[in-house]
Amino acid sequence: MGHDKRALDGDPTDASELIFWCDAMLWNPSQYAGLTRRQVLQAGAVSTLGLTLPQLLEATASTSGRPAREKSCIFIFQYGGLSQLDSWDPKPNSPAEIRGPYRPIATSVPGFQVGELMPRLARLASRYAVIRSMSHRVPVHDIANRMLLAGQSLPALNAPSFGTIVSKLRPSQASVPSQVWLQKFGGGAMPPDSTYLTGGSLGMAYAPLLIGMTHDDNPATPGFRVRAFDSSEGLASDRVQARRDLLTQLESNQRPMPGADTMLRSRQRAYDLLSGSAARQAFDIEREPASVRDRYGRHPLGQNLLLARRLIEAGVRLANVVAWCGLAPGDRFLSVETWDMHGNAGIDIFGNGWNGLGWAMPCCDQAVSALIEDLEQRGLLETTLVVLVGEFGRTPRISRGGSAIGRDHWPNCYSAMLAGGGVRGGAVYGASDSRAAYVHDNPVSPEDFAATLFHALDIPPDTGISPDGFSLRASTGTPVLGLF
Image (tube, rainbow, N blue to C red; front, side, top):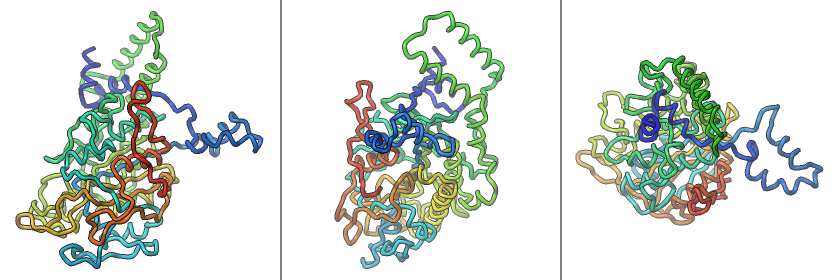
């Protein structure tokens, strides 16, 4: 019992914690694994084609003899809040104190422009969609981040995050964690750990595996190695096997309890994680060719996104990535809040330091474009939703913060990018006013944004997630169907 309590209260980042953490996981495969929600809804119409429902299930569950791949997600958090005017929603006709120094550039989609620091993403505009009308009313980092994580305008402190809900409703069927968090939030503006590392009200069974406790604990750091699957000191593999054999022997003399099958499957997955090679190999970024690592960029965001792609390929359902771009040459570490560009760190928002767009935006452009292209080349983009968004945007008017210039918090109107997962490439949804200050049409609330992501993952937003099945839903929002 002591081990169980420690695992539920602790952080499952090593083998001794992981084995008990995984033991608690509720593993409930979808009844119609391999089918999309749309296919299930259409099943009633297939009799006219001469197919029975079992035949349809068999036909749609395999491609070239392999099960159809379920949807996954790579969620990239631009922690601090990206300036919409200098990225996805430039306003070249506004006064200089609004538009800033960057010019808009054309994309591969006629009539769609982005900021000049995004040339690679500009060329890939037909692969993603942009929402220019994200909106809420809270200009405070930690609260706004809780809103983004929970997909709610007024989230409770224990509200389950988007990733937690996905872990519950669409758990991984492979011998890997369902959800992984790459790079811990840091700095005074971070949300509490309880909002994204514990599973919230759904419990530790659906919490993510955390990789990257500090700013230098990331795949771009020389000598980086994931230690989550290392055995604790004195806990050799033969001792783990001995414990397993003893537990099996004890249980063989007991009457099966309700839910025993689920518990046994969960335990088997825990042992597979510890003793198998699939998870270890997925987390071993050193297996990637140097050319691929260079393509993503040898900075934290680039290497974390490459690691995220490896995890998705291995069967992880959701990889969360904090978009910490690392330090520019000559910088010293201050925070992982790359995108909180007030200018109060002594770095101009338009400068080339770690907290300036001149450094961060090219890093992001390189890494995210490489991710989209890589997923597409590997046949994973259609089943992998890529999300790029911050907790809010930045003020239209440029301000002075101490000795440098910046833009302050602005939740009233900002932008988000979505790619893959059935999202219609080249789409631009919603519009801001002439200064990107307020939404002109089609506002998207935190609830609607979350509902849109659930829809992309073939999860009906109104799916019940509470024990009674109806008092708590995955989302109360309305998905933006025009993006699909």
